[in-house]
Image (tube, rainbow, N blue to C red; front, side, top):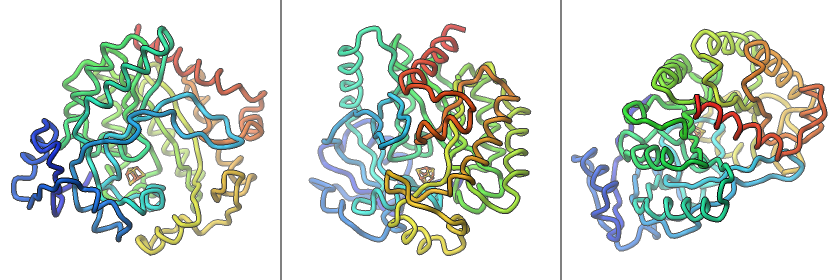
Length: 365
Ligand code: SF4
């Protein structure tokens, strides 16, 4: 993964002495830093590329924790999300944050981390005994900045002490030095989004190579972590069949399925704003070369027949690798589940229960 050095630090006065702020300042002693009463003025539309080279450290004031956003007509899961980082210094051409955060693109780390932990404790107290899955991957990569923020050192020990809570840290990075020194006691899943090497090289700029991600996943398993895999977004390209077959062979050669928490499978989807932004920022991208149609959620997706073909192939190969590893389709409607799995579509609660049962099984092993 390409290392990150910001061109400028913006520090909000309220969090100037927070441990995270101190760690960030220590990591970048030569980067000019400015202390402001509020970084709010920087939270406005602006060119994305320079905004991602500024690192703001701010106080989080919004909603600290929420259910992962649901979309209409799809099988949605029951996980929750908190966002200690907003935006990402990596550069995937298809990254939805380019449109989602276009009014607020400055890379921002929130230093008042106790606020997130308080909200998580309150959520657990409101649902005693109920297993809950949480993640930090909605507005950023969960680990790409971990070497700078040290956040995993706060989350992993916290979740290790929560009998009913499970955290997923999802990444395309190789920043696992700190997690490997910690004992997650089965309550943190380290997950990697994976793509064929050709796609990773061409469309997932600055990220760790696929081979490197798989090597990190293998090391995470050896260190005792359950590992999650996300084959999302599947991207159609010349030779996709062979390339995804090879990716699945590489997964099988690297990982022990008995320590895999789940595999998700999704396909490229985007809104109209994203296409305009992405083609401007990444003129070499080929991801928009196929035909797309608008789906009920307003996003553009591959035609149903192509999506189904890609899912079926990958789904079948995953089943050949291990039937015991739970698989799920990301943000797809019940009819697509039925066509891919050749079974009645499960209720969302059934999928969620299966994932939680798998987590409990791995934590107890
Ligand atoms: S790693 Fe994730 S958050 Fe970062 S640019 Fe890629 S898709 Fe976006």
